[in-house]
Image (cartoon, rainbow, N blue to C red; front, side, top):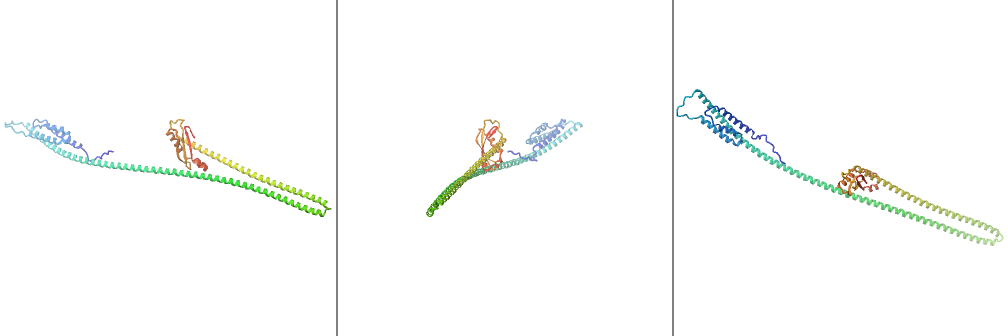
Length: 432
């Protein structure tokens, strides 16, 4: 960039010396005009006119002008000093003598004016030389200043370029660090996602194992109940068999006693026999009734146990149905919450979407959206492009402008994990 050197306030140039030179020559011309009426000793005006004409030239011609003025002065002096003739001159009249004296005074005045003009010319020449030397010095000084300023300007430009390079390198370093930080964040998020998925899988496995354990315990309990019932049945049957054996032995004992008594009491046997038979019949009836009562009680116990098992099975079935109904209700509620959240996101994105001019109705772009825990947008990417980069970019910008989606925090944790990543299809007039 060119820098104009500062103007020295003392650098006046050649204006004033030129004005002074013109003034001096004007005075010379004025004195020459005053002497024009004289008829004798008239100086050679050509030198004066010539000096007047060249006064408008540059100061490099002033030496020539001074020489010409000296020649004109010499001509005037020669004209005034005319030698007398050999013949006697007639006696002049008094008026002619006065005229000659006047012409001589005028010639002396002109000579004096020429001397003064010569002195002024010398002074002007010296002033010009000094002015030229001063101008040369000032020009050299200005040149040095311009060179110094140009060097300073080059240094400033070099420093500015170095500063720009350092800033560019710093900006590049910041960008690299930002990219590295973003990469670390993405890797951390991916690792966190993998850990959450592993924890969810482990949770599902633990729940499945717990459910299998409950089923095995339920089956074992049912098996123990069946074995207990079978054991109780065997015990009841054994007790019944033992009771029959005791009764049979008692009957045999009574028969032996009856036979012995019949041997001793034959006469009273009939009555006694009838009584015994009656008693035995009554006893048998009582035993039969007792056996029937035991059988009825056993049957009632079996019925009660069967009813209890049926009630337990029914209760288990009811619990299973209730669990299934609750799971279905929870699934339906979760699906409704997910659909509600997606509808909220779709409406917000539709309001923020600025469809590019010239977008056709047939254009379709699918954008994958990845959200953070608070509903902020972590990443948007094009899954299916519309073929128009401006259309795809406007769709991604609509998602970014509509974020964050704070409604994500209102959903259950499982639904939050499922809705952290989803796809949106963009078509002019519709977002799904």
